[in-house]
Length: 475
Image (tube, rainbow, N blue to C red; front, top):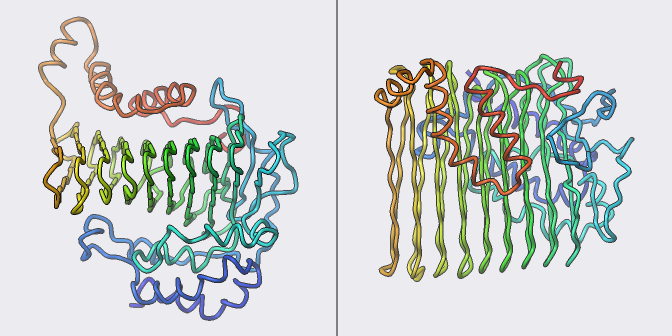
């Protein structure tokens, strides 16, 4: 049997000229090295420690169509899509499959100097600016998924906010998957906020058609000194495979929030790789939530590179049926006086499977490190399975570090007590599970989105699939 990666190696070898011709020089420059890295690495399997719970090679084996010649997709997303998060007004933009939709744009006024639009077009118009950032965090030599995306990507989205500029209105980017056959999409997002800049961004994923999609996405976010950036990602796709790779570089005294929400369906498969590098006195909050999925594999690697940096890394997973959620995290303390707080919670029902592997590395010289890692897991049935592996490696002597994990079931005494006071068993069970994950939701620093997520989580526990109001896609 042909290995999963061979079909993609053959495809690139045959179509390299076409891929490059329909992209731009800045994105073409690292393509050959990325392809060589992908050939050398191949898709990871469960034989690799880092991927021991998720077999990527098996999941990438099916055959998908690609739009390498950039044929036009006949859809106007502004006519078919509306996404409402109450009390939040946004400037709405679209990426259809992996191409920025520029035929119709919102009338929102952007401050002077802000660049927003197609990554391919902006890289052509401002090559030196884009070249300075593109591919600088996503290392293709160390991860096959990142190498794969860099090899095939041709376009995407870019936001550039110059020094001291504040973008008041949240920017909403909706990725729409549209195809008549099983289809692969490879897109890139690049966000650059210079010193003192501020912006908020909400990213949503939707699928219009009942076919299998395989989507790879690499996100690189650069946040400068004293800059503030919030990124919220919500995924609502259908019969799709979602793969996200993100990278974040945070400068001195910067503050950055990243929220990811996966709300897909049981037939979805998602890989997400997120890389973060923080400089001195920066503050980052990462919050990833899996509400609906099929198979999800998230990897987060954070490097605290400057003195006084702080990372708050949070995650939540709610799974039932045969769903699979795997989170792999690394927090690398390279500098002194840094702080990391990590909290992951799982609620597993039916025959679902959860996995958590978290490493906190304190390097020599990283004195006065403060680190806390917590993984709490609730198995609502005896058939649910949780695998957890918290890890600490410490090579400095003046530190305060702790880590721990628990796996348990619902408190029978609490259930009995609530039923004695007139609460049904089903409602008591729901209330206990909701209280269990509430701590993760409350880390969100945007009230409108926090309220929305409280509602989505409650609907999830009640077994209701959420649909966006007024959306022609989510009928």
